[in-house]
Length: 450
Ligand code: PHE
Image (cartoon, rainbow, N blue to C red; front, top):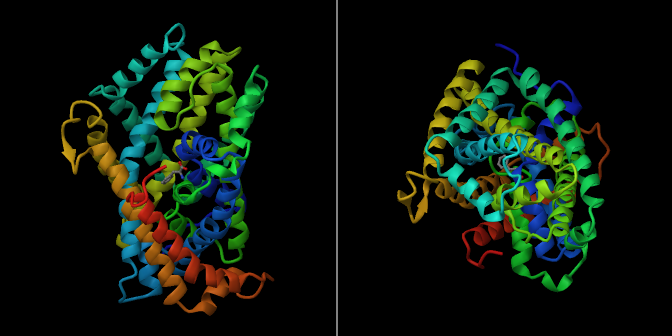
């Protein structure tokens, strides 16, 4: 049998997982919800959630992958043959497939915006014109698709080259670059007149804003931000060696993910406040608000281009991890050759994505349960697939798997001296299932969104 691929170095595996976790969510969502829902107070809540729910869930996924030694579905089948736990993996692979189909579209937008800022297309435009530029672009029947296809092609190319020579090699370059770009943008932003307002927006604690809805919102965001519930960390876990300290790895990834989200906020909000624009979140913030700010800023041309390069890099390391979930499944479970698996899945996912892109324009009248294709894919995967996949996997790990084997994963068969195996077991048994069910109820809007 051919030797299975794996990560070649600790830095490589960290870079690949941090690359997956750091995505558009860190840049366009976290800073805004943090600022709007309690600043420093929100941060305390978020950190507690990452520590007690995000981190152990990530460790659980790594373990399932490392013990099973296969893709997200195959690993469950190895660990529990003839049982149905692998359905968690099926949901994960489907989630990765569908998320990538529309994430690839948004990722393509970032390329158009690199070109827009490099060719100075925002200069001299008022905010209405900038909004029209964006709306006109995403509803265009062809332009966004060209960028999407290009982005997916790059993703497919990197994944087809392999875990070590493709994913790991590129992550080792892209993740440090991303860090450097954010820090440069931070230094610039904090020097802007009135930039401190943005700093205050992000950090000034307001405990009166914290209610159960905000806590659940933070929980849902942590989930998405750490790329949990979609088979990614199971797949990456299966490429880790037996002497990797899983707890330490998950901790470092969680810290890096949160740190980058904060640094992104520090780059964006001082600029937004300094130029008196209203803060928003999501696509509106990066594609409609910020293009108003850059042309007004000293050196804005340079910083604008840098910002969209940052966005594209953050998206690319995430699309790579999503594609790898699907490719690993074809390679491990069907013995398809990696290159073929990468080409095939890239093509099919891109085609689904084309419909998602068209649903912002020519196909906008075509609705599924009241949403266009793009929103439907986003909502179904985020609301149902991720949470269900994660719930099934922690119930399996906490209640139906040999707990000694779980502890062995934490201590690497006794070679690491760590004292938290017991705490980990109770978190997985009780805290995680309850937390995940709450996220689920929140996401299907039982409590109303924040
Ligand atoms: N974690 C990424 C973010 O914060 C999003 C993502 C979701 C990446 C799903 C991969 C898979 O933006």
